[in-house]
Image 1 (tube, protein in one colour):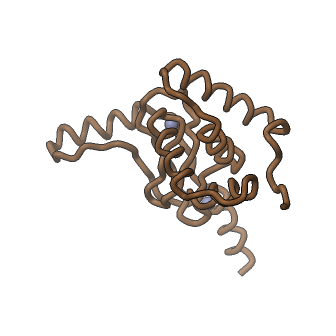
Image 2 (cartoon, rainbow, N blue to C red):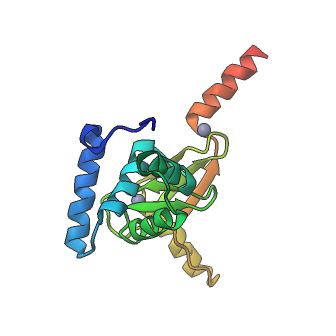
Image 3 (cartoon, rainbow, N blue to C red):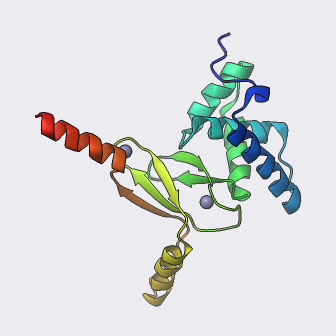
Length: 165
Ligand SMILES: [Zn+2]
Ligand SMILES: [Zn+2]
């Protein structure tokens, strides 16, 4: 079987330290980052951005052979509950949280062209949006904020294409 992904021992330093931090975070919360949950988080980190559950399932299959989809979903549910991972509803993808792993409302910038997702650390804006929702008495309870648009990279590409045309 081809091994596209590096084995755990050959992890990039950044991923290794993120995994270590996640382990410590779960320990502090009294939850268990089992080997399987940790591996799903590792695969998500190795993707370097947002990923679909079935992409992670593919990555896992490359390492272990057959993997049930529920294995990946259950691990993602756990990781979301620990605030290590966010779901990007606009694209049905998942992204590793880049903040201190407190319960928080992420502000996610979602590129509709390349599907890249960036998490902004801007609690002030999130608080403001939720305060306005309360004021409007909309009865709407917010969780995560997803802003759809086109990222800088794609805009630069569009400019280049426009210049060529
Ligand atoms: Zn986050
Ligand atoms: Zn983009």
